[in-house]
Length: 275
Image 1 (cartoon, rainbow, N blue to C red):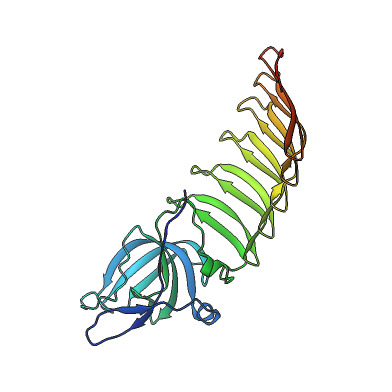
Image 2 (spheres, rainbow, N blue to C red):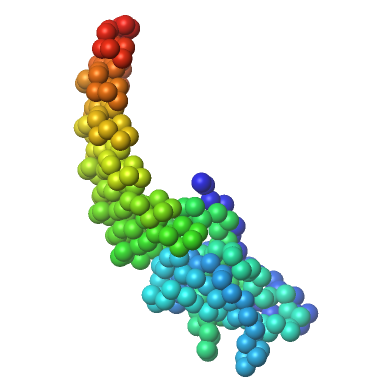
């Protein structure tokens, strides 16, 4: 599912009227260096601290890009709960944000003008380009999660891009796909699995495009369903398809992505269509 991002990034300006006004500066190297915590997190609690007389918001960290390795982070609203200021952060329990924080005494401080991104859908999120293109994503192991905190994917980031082996899981925690990246591009063999753990498909890539054989299997039989061949992303050479019984269903020949010929067979293996 495509995600919807709502941007809120601004600087706090105080007025005697206590109205909150924000400006929208570009994200800079200086801001990145000064920001202590950058993470995607879901608000799981909203409480009031009588000692400091501030609203406290508790975030469940989904993915961290800078700062500590904490799984939960508590932040305080810049203005007190009883203040008439409109500059309090209006985040609600259940909402998910990409958020940029700096420490303020006991807790991290947040306001309506804190730089943040509201993530409206988290089936799979994409870091906005103004942050990712800035190399704000730190190198190292990264994990993505479903709404219920089940692991969705895991792998390494190098120079801001996916690198090496990555694994992808379904909502039940079962491995669905495994493969390698090179400089952010699909590379080498990628294997997908049925929920039973049986191999569903094997693809081969070079520099992000299909290269070599692609093989798909029938569910529950471990028999080939089709075998295709690619060169630089184009259909090339002989392709084959089989029925679940193992009988040849069709065969075709390609050159530079153009179909040269195709023959189809019935379930008994008798030729019945020729192109």
